[in-house]
Length: 420
Image (cartoon, rainbow, N blue to C red; front, top):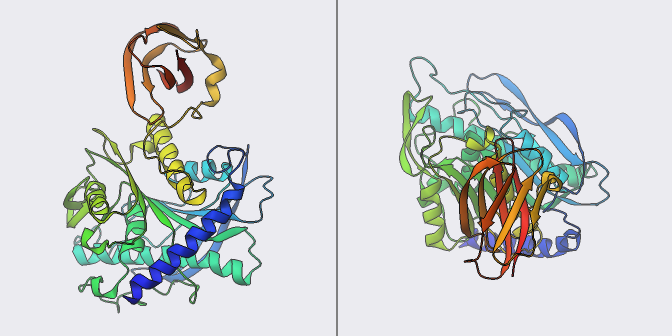
């Protein structure tokens, strides 16, 4: 009861803070890249702990801020990289693009490093206890990073202008596993009994000893890109909202509930992937978004621009729901604002149209076209003849405003269509 009451107080406080932030949500802030550049402050020490070998590690993070921003307080997104808990970096391609893009929307973003390495890897081979301990170390470091920003605001003059009532945590792969366990492994009665806290760097219970004690490690919501949880039973009503992304053919982290294998070889333990997490969220009535990458393997957004754009936009809409009070939009695209920067090179005419419209791309041949209504439903799709100019019959569509998604070999563009 005490835990639920504390969560209620925190969520009430976060809601009030979000209402105060609404005043900043004008001119496209937090939904569009209104800043042309961002600046990075690298290798900031946020804590210290010992690795699985007992060696001391100074924990570092990089902060991204919008260049020229005059806002006194900004929401913070902390991101954790992937790497199967044996590698990865805070400057990796799985997190850096998101740091840049969301900083240009007006957020402060931070990419953290955390302790990696698993006992027994590669030989004689790690077991489930070794794997769980590596997750707990990452969770302890992630919580220390959250506390670092609250401490720097309270004691250091808030050099990064962070609104400490608006902190979000996002992760990719192993980083997503950290984010999920930070949010939902929040009761010592659920703490894995096979964890030996006397092992290197594991003391401190749920919070750990990676730094900045005395400050809250609570976050408003989390973003899970291809992660999993040990057991969805750890998720309870009133827990943090989540935005999840996962490929149905993920061979690294299960899409549903299955055994997870380290580097595809070592069986670790049974976990619940994003599909199972979403089912639990829906059962409990917790706000969430879930985007399935149909037929895709692990983290396709890292190498595929189309999947990255989808991830960025849905993540943006999810966060804006809490930061700005926008309605929760979990589909892509949403609305007519999703016009790409290349749209000036794409013509659509006549517009408005009653029966047929034509699209002309002055640079690239068009390979496919999709039309979405304003609630994000795909209402029309057509393969094309790979020409720069294509005509399409929309006579069967009801009158209204639509988003046209135009595919070429080089890019994806968007255009607004008005059907009379």
